[in-house]
Length: 192
DNA sequence: AGCAAGATTAGC
DNA sequence: CTAATCTTGCTA
Image (cartoon, rainbow, N blue to C red):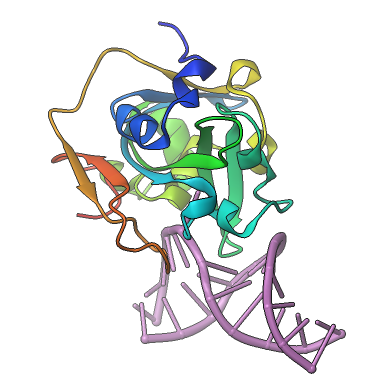
């Protein structure tokens, strides 16, 4: 199975956010290989999207979004959690897709070790903060290009039966935009 | 320099 | 419902 190439991410951000549902996120961490199937994403559309970090201009934190597509954008949320995004769209458009939930596929013991053994399988990678923790994603990945990263995507041909489109979660502006997508009926998404 | 807010989560 | 906890950007 081949890695998804950076060209995949150079397209329209909403297209990437929808198309990523069903793809595999793989991490060859020092602990071992962990793989999850993407079941929930959100699109952040650059300067004209008030909820996007890039809307208020270039900063040290959001600089990766102003670069080319197909790079990892990791940031600290609420000073406590990490959120993982992949940059998208044309170079001049600072946009990204946030990964919000995965169905654990491989390396589940590693995920449980990182999250705590008591956590139910359905909650292991449910929510952006939980996803980064279970997968072992750190700030070290921020700014890395997909091609040279231990963190990458694969397509095994599996597709969701249907997609659900809703408003994004946890934002205070741009609430009306329906830019959250998830695998219909998946028990692994962050919320119902 | 000080302060409020934020793409969250676990626990009381 | 609230604490935890840190970066950014606004105000003085």
